[in-house]
Image (cartoon, rainbow, N blue to C red; front, side, top):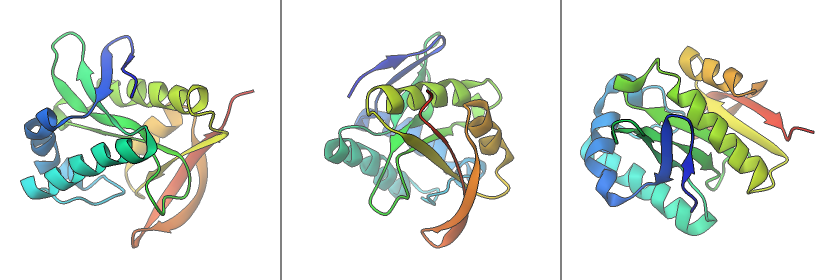
Length: 168
């Protein structure tokens, strides 16, 4: 899987070495409660979630990357393309440690992931599933060019589907 660089971030494959930072991020109930795919806040939950993203990469050839701050080398979170079984289309998603909220990193990583989907995966349409009431993620989706499309049920809960077509 490719490593991507943006102005302030490095997006590289998630590895087992990210586990402690990843578990710390998901242990924050404000972070975990915003995820369209509920994972829980315990270390065992974080382990299964990290393994899911690494396994997705093995099966699909792409997955969320670890998002790392260039200036410090700090783990910021995860972001990238995603289409597990039962997902309603090729998606991009993001999940950042609360320490890094409000810096524009989710939008920066989201734009890089979106470009990857269109340029490397030849996607015609890319979506994001967002929980109703998650104003921060809705704002990120809109900043990267997504628009609200419809609501759907996903894994037992109603989610907003935001998305966009390949630019012409």
